Structures are given as C-alpha cells and as structure tokens.
Amino acid sequence: MATQFQNAFSDNALKNLVILLVMARGLSEPERDTYVALAAALFAAPFILFSMLGGWLADRFSKQRVMSAVKLAEVAIMLFAAFALSLRSLPLELTAVFLMGCHSALFGPSKYGILPEVLPHDRLSWGNGILELLTFLGIIFGTVVGAFFAESLAGTPGLAGVILALLAVGGWLCSRQVLPVPAAAPDRPLPLNPVAELWKQLKVMRADRDLWRANWGNVGFFFVAAMVQMNLLLHAKDVLKLGETRSGLLSAALALGIGFGSVAAGFASRGRIEYRLVPIGALGLALSTIPMGLAGVGVAGFTVALVGLGFAAGFFIVPIAAVLQHRPSPENKGAVQGAANLLSFVGILGASGVQWLATRQLHLTTGQVFWVCGACALLTGAYSAISRGHFIRGEA
Image (cartoon, rainbow, N blue to C red; front, top):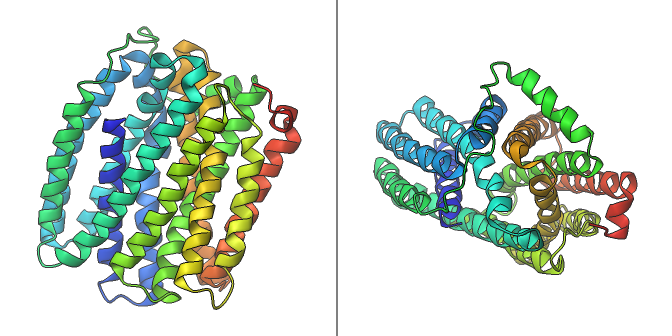
C-alpha cells in the first residue's frame, strides 16, 4: 500500500506538472486543448500496448519481485524526466509521461493481483477500500504538488524531476518489503501475440457472468473518470478562472471524495462483495454532475458537487475491483488483471478522443461535458443492474 501510494503520487505529479507547463506556454486555445488531450493519451497508450505483458509477468514470476523490478525502473524514468524538464523540451516531457505509463502498465496487474493472495476473501473489499483511499490520497498530493512545482519551480523545472527520482527510490525500498509470494504460473509461456492473448482472456471472462459485467463496468468507470479529470482542468481555467494551484486543489477534492467513498464502500460491504453499491454509485455520479454543468455555479458549490461525485465513484469501483480480483482462478489472476487494465485504458484513450470531439467539434461547453460524463456513468450503472440480477439483490 505504501508502494502504491508513492506510485500514484509520482504518476500524477509528473503528468499534472507537464500538463500545467503546456497550459503555461502561451499556446492558442486549440493547441492547448490538443496537447492536454495528447498528454493524457500518451499516458494511456502503454496500458493498451503492455498490459498483457504486465499480466504475464504477474503470473509467471512472484508479484512482489515484479513490483520491485518495475519500481527500480521508475528511478531511471524520473531521471530522464528531470533531464527533459531541464531542457524545457515538450517532446521529451511527453516521452517521460509515456514512459511512466509503461511503468504503471507493468506494475498494475501485480499490484492488484497480489491482494487476494495476501488477504482472506472476507477482507478483500475492505482491502480494496483502503488501497483506493491511499491511491487517491497519492493522487491528491501528487496533483497538488505537480501544480506547486509548475508555479514555484517554473524557472528550474528539472529540480522537480530530481525530487520525483528520489521519491522513486523510496518506492523501490518499500516494494522490497512487500510480502513475498510464489509465482502463480511459473511455466506460462510469454504471449507473443497480445491480441490473441487478450481474446483468450476475454473468453475466460465471458464464461463468468460476474467477471464479464465487472470488466465492462471497470472500462466505463475509467472512461468517465478520465473525462472528468481532463475536463476539470479546462473548466477550472476557462469558467472558474482559477490559477494552477487552486485548479490542483479541485482535483484534490475529487480524489479525496473517491478515497473516502472507497473506504465507505469497503466497510459497507461487510465482509462480502456488495454488488448493489455499483448502481447506487452510478446514480450518485450522474446526479453530482447536474450542478457542475449549470451556469453561474460558484467555486464552493462546484467543489461540493465534485466531492459528491468522487464519493459516489468510490461506491462504484470498490465492488468491481473486488470481483476482478476474486473471480479468476489463482493461476490466471495476473492475466485477467492485465486484460482489464488494457481495456480500462482503451476507455481512457477513448475519453481523450471524446473530450476533443465534444469541445472542438461539437462546441459543447465544459459544463455540458460534465453532463455527458454523468449520462455515461448512468448508462454503465444501468447495464450492471439490469443485466445482472445479483447487482440488484446484493448476492455475493
């Protein structure tokens, strides 16, 4: 959990720092919006390219060893980011964001796959709630510190990269203390065709109705979350007229809501996987976006709605994450997590495209884009509730 906290912190500090440096370059509005979407897309693309490899690593080797090796690679990536930031080279900065995406794509299946190996089933939802809280606390501090770096280290941005490299060393040291677990499938061959491997895992998930519904609920969640996060930066600057640090605090309010919503969902699950939380969370997401899109809503009212949106999101994602971890067979947990990661970042990549389409082609306001997010969340929750009776009855 400490390793994941550092991972979430550093991911978001670097990504937010690069996005805010882009927004401070004095680009035209179309160029600015394009680069913001590009930064998000470059972070998402490695999950599509390398998640299946991350899943294979998680099953083929000890998940603890994979986590430790990937965290060591992060040290080198952050040193490269420091070099890119010191040169003020936008292509190199975006490359660093892409490399951090590669790091996280390989890290994710082991991080989530190890939970059911070290926790009993009746503590899995609780463990997910705590992990999500720490993840989003990492996002809070990373987002705020990224904004702080953009403002206070504007003259020496390379120093931010050095600080993040030192934090990566701390994350590596934490990863070495994770409980060692044996390899789940030490004889599994390397999947040379990731498309065929994805298709294979989709067939595995399709055979389990709970797993199948959870997978697509996970995709829908990350699509909405990515779109809200991208749109939030634009709305804060263009409509609420906030500076970089206060914009970062809005993202922190969202992450704080998700974190505490996740903990509440973990405790509400009462030692089981509580499916009924999914449609409840989806409805809360949709209702929270209504005031966010209204003209004339002030910063205080917008922030309250944003926290409510985050809290509802925690209710939505905790049972879905627990299903994805619990339902696969022990020797296939990493592969399923890899496939779910890949598809979730297809959703994130799709959000980048929809954000660009909505603002640049359909000329929707950023407030109206929040309504689009709410409608998508409602559709995802309705799919989960209508197509899966267990979601309605709350059966484990």
